[in-house]
Image (tube, rainbow, N blue to C red; front, side, top):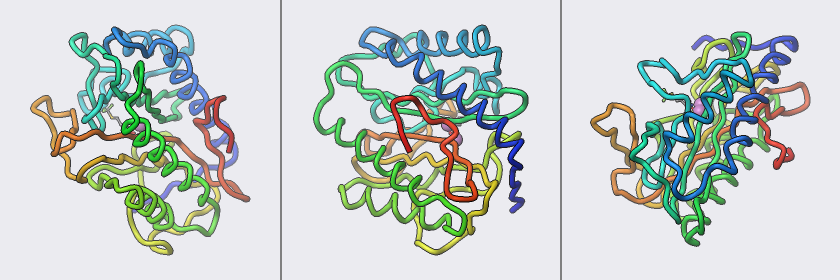
Length: 256
Ligand code: MF3
Ligand code: CO
Ligand code: CO
């Protein structure tokens, strides 16, 4: 495992990329309504990043992925491919995951949307998953362990009768999109890598209403729950600071 700590100047650059990624999610939010297709949302995000932000959509061409966003609806856990055939309907839940590159540095973030009128069971899944991310962020500081993050996510999810997806994880990030360390969303407090100032990584828990098991569709990308029940995910890119954490992809609706 090759852990790449970032300098203060490098984190300054990560902050710019992170802000741009957060801005994409803020831009797209009013467009997430019944009747919009996930392809429509992808086009809006692509054109905003390229034409207005003068930045690069990192997902385009990443391991053969062709779109700017991952759009994951209902039982789709992650890596949903935007499509003109996927038209959002009242009561859907949607994750939009976007990564922006600016001056070689990556910012990676995702949020959930309740499309139209939310069903209470979906509202609860989305809220508890966000709480999992926030409880994990709260623990990040020099001297904490990666296992602390996994443990708090697992505890909060299972207390709420949900399961934690184990087949996909968070990751180190910087000039490389996915780098060491792997950030598991389950585990044992006090175990694993000890966090240090300058470490930059994502936390991106995927929480299921049913079992943790996943399947990849024939398109080679779309990851769904094996049991067909719904899944939610929220993601931020973080930097470990001397005193705690900076959320590089913070949106204006959030405070840490
Ligand atoms: N943004 C995803 C993550 O959180 C990765 C998407 S890769 C893609 O790490 F190719 F599917 F876009
Ligand atoms: Co990520
Ligand atoms: Co992401």
